[in-house]
Length: 94
Image 1: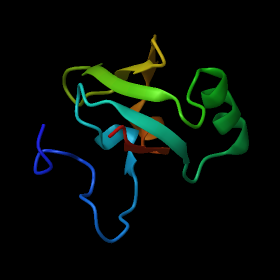
Image 2: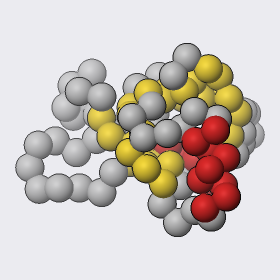
Image 3: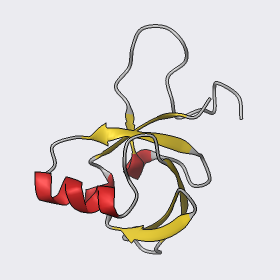
């Protein structure tokens, strides 16, 4: 994958992190935190493995709208609603 193909910003001015719902299928990334999420739901995501530094990758999305999505998080596959994935912040693995 070249820098032009990357969903992450090239080096330069700081850009907002990408969210899990916008990560292309098969692109690895690392969790950096959560945005606008109820503390109880954030705790639940951490229990599922989405803690800071966890490696994630979208495996596939459901047909007709893509909800839910299958996500590999540190070797475990979980299903998430796209709306919930939108609150998980990521950074490039490179």
